[in-house]
Image 1 (tube, helix red, strand yellow):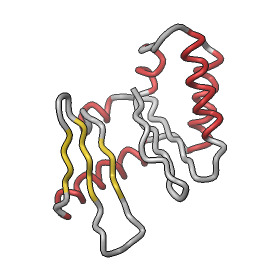
Image 2 (image 1 turned 135 degrees about the vertical axis):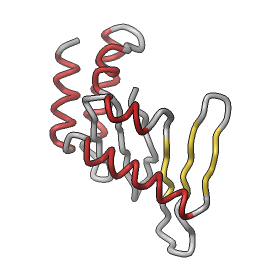
Image 3 (image 1 turned 180 degrees about the vertical axis):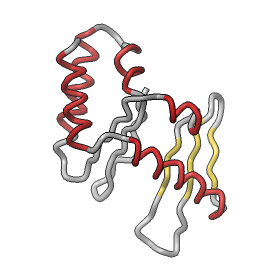
Image 4 (image 1 turned 90 degrees about the vertical axis):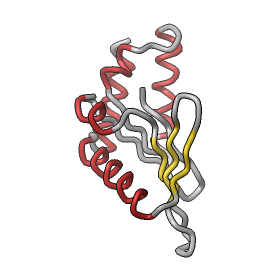
Length: 130
C-alpha cells in the first residue's frame, strides 16, 4: 500500500505505491476507504504537498520491498539520511554512497509515477469506483 512520507511546513509528501494494491487491499469498509481517499484529495490541495501514485506494481516489486524515507535537510552541513523500515526494526543509513543508491531508487519511482494532477484524478476515480 502507499506509504506516506515526511510532511513538514516547508516539505511535502511523496505517496508512492502500486495502485492495484490500493484498489484491492481495503482497510475497513467502503466508507473507510472513501474517507481515506477523500483525505488524500484534501491534503493534495496544500501547497507543500505532492502526491504521486504508481498504478503498476511491477517495477516496485523489483526495486523496493520495504518503505524508504529520505531525510533531506536545508542545512548543507547536515548530510542526507536514508531511513529504512523493516518488519521488526528500522535502519538509518548515513554513508553518502549508500544514501545515493536510495536516492536513485526514489528518483526512479518518481519518474514512473503519475504526474501529481493525474495522481489526484486517479485517486478520485478509485474513490468513485468504491
